[in-house]
Image (cartoon, rainbow, N blue to C red; front, side, top):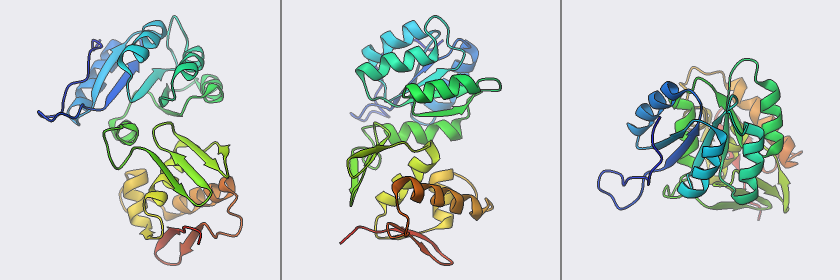
Length: 238
């Protein structure tokens, strides 16, 4: 198990590396994940149960916490509830087959999103980087009209009211808001939001845009406009 400690600097830079706290009883899985993510510049601290995870979440103040649906001592749902009383840190739930009930309960308790377990670096890396306060492109609060997106807390408000977005729709909105008033192509969305090749179906993007519009109350497509044959553009109201 990776021992919790202070996050190191990156290649001699004075800026600390992004930190991911992983709470999972499978020590081999955590070591493998830590080795892969640290090659990408992400520091991983691992603990085997929910009690130690709560302690280290306060001591280390990680940028993101990843907890297994099989977390012992203090289970994932109780862990999420406890963390939410103290911090707005993004909490990801690692789920596999048979964990649907834990996923529903954890999301209701305030978990940010669910990710596949065994863990996949291409899925986790952008989530950690987006929440890292040292990343200028990923930090802070973005505001476009009545839509406000808090990157670090993974929260969205429309006219001051909280709106729950699934992870992929949150990332899509984040990307569109970062490029407000500019047309982004479907290919760019594939790369930056799905981290996928250009061969991915564009219908997947269209479905997520439709759902995002509905959640934001954009019934007349005035906020997120379709640029036919090209992609989409999020408009800043006059």
